[in-house]
Length: 150
Image 1 (cartoon, rainbow, N blue to C red):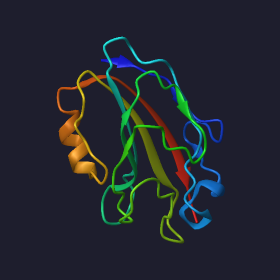
Image 2 (image 1 turned 120 degrees about the horizontal axis):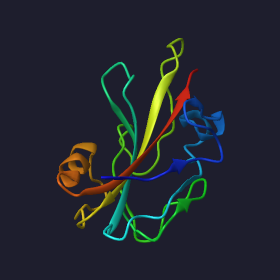
Image 3 (image 1 turned 180 degrees about the horizontal axis):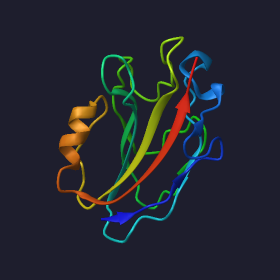
């Protein structure tokens, strides 16, 4: 599996995600950029999950069907042709960080996947659907971790 660089102009790896990208500030997804996908990639998928949530890993953002020629997203952007999964807040698209007040900082894993075959996912898919679709299709990936505390 090839590694892809994934970064954000809004925060660095393992640093605080600015509050403007939180759930309480309107759920605007942070800007992201990544290295070009390897030639064998036919689709990109993106997930943001918080493994530190009290109820277990919490899905904040699920996207699939991203054109493999894409090398980034502006803040709040949903790429043309992409499909949005249902986050664990119950809505489609990005749901920003909202850890319980008083918790230690939570980690938010932004993961980009380059798929060697189409995922077949449709709007409203779940994190489990994405995990199933990734099986034996990941040709490349990249990870960026942000933190957040309230």
